[in-house]
Amino acid sequence: MPTVTTSRSGFARREEPYLFSDNGLKVDSGWLNVDPWSQTTTSWRTGGLYESPDQRYEDMTGTQLRSNIREEYARAYDSGHEFSTQKTVDEQTTYQVILRVKPSTVEKVYTGPMLINIALVNQSHTYPSYQSHLPSSNQKKLDGTKLWSMAVPTASEVSLAAFLGELREGLPSLPGSSVGKAPGPHASAEEYLNWKFGVVPLKQDLQNLARGIAEFHKRVQQFRRDSGRNVRRHRKLAETRTGSVVQTPVSATGYIGIQRKNLVDVFASDYYQSAGKIDVFDIVETKISFAGAYTYYLSEAHDFLGKLERYEQLANHALGVEFDLDTAWELTPWSWLVGWFSDSSSFVKNLVAISNDNVVARYAYVMHHIKVTRMYSVTGMLLKSGASGPTSSHAFETFESKTRTAATPYGFGFNLGTLSSTQKAILGALGITRAPGVLHSAS
Image (cartoon, rainbow, N blue to C red):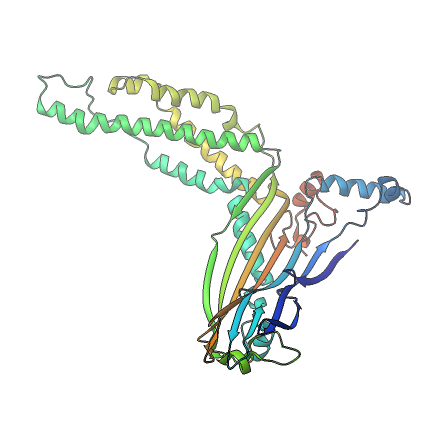
């Protein structure tokens, strides 16, 4: 079944009662519908939702059946689809008010909603459209690409490379003249200074280096563990919240009122001599998030992985010994560091190559949640002499948009027509290709 667009509408609250009375006697009463809402949703719908497996497969040819099996296998990793929904909800704040006036011998009382006519306000003035706050197709791709780069498992290749560079820059060198043990109580000032500013800093440098190597190995082991697995990641961008005035105060006459009394508008004639002023204010909130499942393959044949345990033993030994200049050389010939830097540099370069082709997403989506709250405020309402009731009122119209945009296996906005033969082979091996709705395209 194809992508379907559906629309719904209704009222967010139950009906509100109203009552007019003169000298305690009911003159008019009834119920009002308030807070209308509407929603439009576009999403994918499965044609087999209400069918049994037997019904679904019985009319398929052999080719169709094989294709369906491949698609269902791929969908085992991804149960989502592109999706969008927009919902608008009105909300009043003065659902039940009491207006009372006694101009002569007749006391007139109204109990019920006092409403701001949001639809009429919107029709009478030009405000920024809610759609103007929605991200463009290009913006969705840009946000998706940014979050993709933050979430991809080999994103650490950059930090690993920087980390490796920092370790290389901090590689310690032993001073030309050595001092054995810590200087005793009768040592010369020169011996003390040599120890204080030569040996002690060197000890710290070597131990920091050993700790750095151990940390580097932890990251490499994580790459090793995740190889061949589905690595699920979630990321978010910083939420934003902005406010702006979209309507400076204007007369609220005609925009606020109560239910008619026996079809006669008595809001102005009986209770208020001025409806006050109305202004409009927008608050825009944006949330952007990402969810995806990546997979990649890291060859165990890489020399560096085979040497990890030995390197770890050497680094741990360097952390565990009692240190002086003699034991600094006894740890092991420090030439092993040269080999470690060479092997680790090669490994990082290999990660860069892996990220170009081998890392693919079984599914990846960027979600945009935009919420615009438009606040209508009526203030400065002036009651008639002898009348009582509220002198202000507020109403809100909330527009919410949620969209989910799919990526291709190689990213957002990637042109599948430019896939290399290697990339096609990888997608085929992973069972990702030719599966409708499963990242086969971003459209």
